[in-house]
Amino acid sequence: METVSRKNQTWALGIVLFFSLVSIITYSYNEYYIYLSAYLWFGFIYGMCLQYGRFCFASAFRDLFAVGVPRMVVGIMIATVLFAFVSAFVTATGISTFHSSPTSIHSVIAGLVFGVGMVFAGGCASGSLYKTGEGNGVAFLVILSISITQAMFVDVGGWLNKLVPASWTESALSKGLPEGLDVGNGWVDQYLAGYVWNQPVTSFAKMLGFENESFLGAYFGNLIVGVVVPALLLLMVVYLFYARSSRAMEPGGGTGGGIGEDIKGFWGMLISSKRTALAGLILGVACGLQMFVMEGLRIKFGVRNAGEILQRLGSDYGLSMRGTVFDPGYWYVTTQEAQWVGWLLQKLGWKNMDNIFFGYINGIPNPALNPADWMSLALIGGAAVMALMSNEFKFKKPTRELAFLAVIGGALMGVGSRLGLGCNVGGFFVRVANGDPAGWLFGLGMIGGAFLGVKALNWWTERKMEKELIHLDL
Image (cartoon, rainbow, N blue to C red; front, side, top):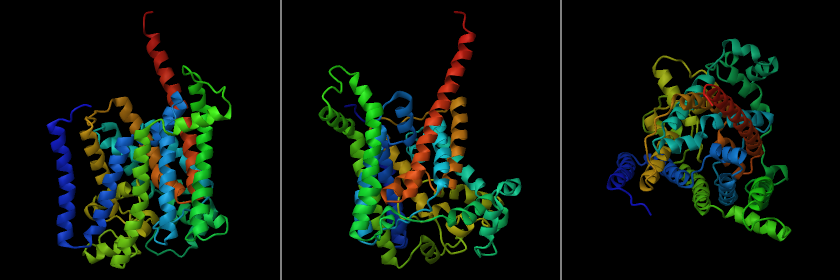
């Protein structure tokens, strides 16, 4: 095992001490800050798990479609199933913070756009965060691109309004939203209030006639029917089309032993990467535990949203018209990054509190007091600590080509995130694990988009190589 340098140990310890001091000092000032610190330390755990297990949806599908390696896809499914077991318990106790998303074809389309973007960028939303913690300059550009695109996209109008169906506009204006919202002049506002909000919100439990909080609803409907069965089917497809064929080519491999040989091969695929499986185990448990902790803190402080906590702390700037801020209560990525840019644009004179995303739902609180911001920043810090302790931290300056792809891919992910009301984490991972059908729809779109993205990148690479070979004197 490679020895960790004293310098890396010092930096890792410094990061941990910094986050510890933030938690201790803020709590000593006011106990409400423990709510933000809870987000911080769960984010730190997520960052360590992601870096240790190399969890990245873009890498998973790129490896699968480009070179036929299923390791990361298997790891993601393992983490999802484990998260689902914990989520079922939390849901059955009645203290889950999760809420389902509207279910319709928009999730598939959004996932498709996001999937293409993450392959172009070389990292998904969560993957780019943890890679930023490793010192990866490309990943940092991806996060910037996602954030800026979202903050601007949710406030666009003008000529884009000509693309809005009249039925969307009519439905959005009939919702009786506050007068301060300029719903009729925002493409995303009319898309949300005029279309998405009209779609059914359900779960696998409800589709089977059970309540989410009931034993049958939580464990049979959402867990078994909604997660375990689809995950097993997906893993079987991966095994048959990828792992099985590659195994047959190995010395002593093959599938001549019939179903017994396939069962052995399938199990071997599941345990092929103990590191990824271990990271998935911790990640899944932590995700479920965060819902339990956040709901417990809400009960303790008698609040339903962090906006109330910020008001009690005397910081009401940037609260939405409903007095709320983005406070999912579970792991989420992209919305808080959009808030960073939204807050900055507001300070620079861009009036962006008249749209639904910022003005009516999420707000744009000071990043220093935004709970979800603490989670994302700590995720980067947790990934940095793990990278330092494994000698994998290294500043990597992006090339011009990778920077271009990072910006384009990040922009596509930003658009996909807002169309799908979430990214690979909030739009797929968390939703699927909590029995939300919309999560699988987003996932199907994301898989299709990743496939198209891999094909497009392969075509571009081949064309580039052809042009380079033309200039060689062979």
